[in-house]
Image 1 (tube, rainbow, N blue to C red):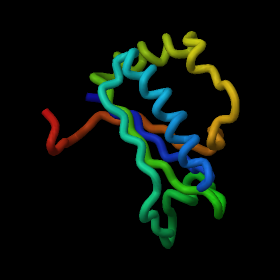
Image 2: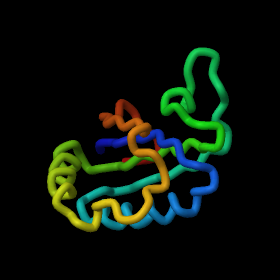
Image 3: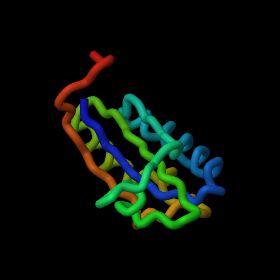
Image 4: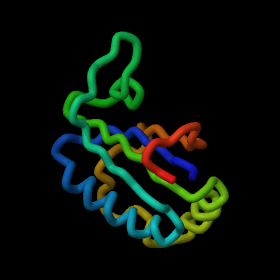
Length: 118
């Protein structure tokens, strides 16, 4: 298992546009081997004393935080998928992207411990 995680600031009035955008992308990622995607819309994202999700992505007052992760079988599958996805015309932006992609945070991780998965 290999995890790609993201923190994304999304304008509050773009929740449905983001959901549709994410759903469309997830269908394509599945074709490339992604096992699972979870898209989470902000419910309780407190302001920290030193740092927090909002500051990490320079969120504006009207933006909500999306915390999302993708589960891939392994790093090699994700890397191969990324190489092929750069050529996939379906993933080229068409129309308005419902967030500022320059401010999202991406990180990839090897799980140390999981509960509830085999």
